[in-house]
Length: 475
Image: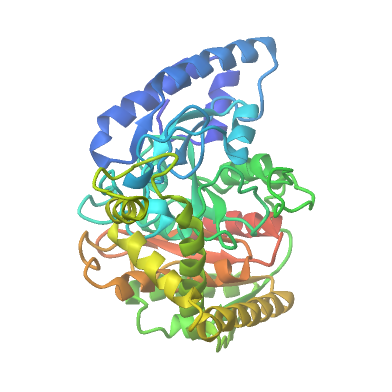
């Protein structure tokens, strides 16, 4: 068994008796060890994974195994797994062990997926390069001098390098789709509320979604149908029916696709990415689909709206990490107040502190209405305009990122340049609609290019079907 095989291949081999779950896990463990220098894993659950493999082998022998038997999954270091450490790749949560298991992770376990470890990420999910982790940077397996994207860089590389069958990440403003584009895998962000956030360490609660990395659309759709759905532990989770997405991958109609003029004319967009995107648009037209260029004048307001609101929510969410009850506590504090200050100063990284300060500023009494309240109103307009566009078209199609993976340190001294990497992904996050990134060729340096498809809320079935169709066109 090659460790980059799809879950369909694994299932077939299991059914034919060619392999068992223990041998699958052992091969993944060997690959993880061989490629440890990529730094995708923070911790590997070796004994747990092997024990689970033996239990699932017994279930398979008895004909009682779940839908995901034989699937090996890694989880981002912001998703809780009971009894194991979780620290959001931050010093401030060093040594903290989770008391619960994230709902999405538990649903995978219930269907006999094997959780093999936790994956590196930007601290608290804040970053576009995976350079902001207390565990060190993750290397892009396509070119180890380049970033894997962020914040779910470890999850993307784990799939890219064949360390797992699939991985869970989180997407607040593009943190699944952007690293998927940079590493040449498939990354899905569902509709906000489609997947429960219970057991996810929050960054920006009205944006955070749990997403999925895989090699194939089918594997991604299968995982989504397992983890999606209402959860009594998360009052924001949707009650809408979960469809059998993996069985609905046939596109059986001509579709209407909108292309945002502003994205294709953006000065930030790389020429090769533009050409590859135009090529797939031309192919769609040749296949009889309707492709229309439209204007979206609110596009220039999306990124500032996103950063005002997410930093404000981060300021509120991260106030709970103070060194009192758990995690890191500074030894320098001489009083309660100084302990708070020194713990947070020493425990949080530079990017997290930057966003906390920005968020605290926009929430302050003097500036609350000028920034936070106004941004909430603009968010509503962006959401309404996006949904209106998606009521007239089936999909919005655009590049996932303006550039391919950049080199380490290239944007480190310029936070604005780093934030611009989210230029094309934040629209779906601000609007709460589902979006997916699929591979769309490579540039002259052999670095992957991503194509992003956006659909209307709770249209995951249609999004997966069109994405499956597109992967055949781009193959």
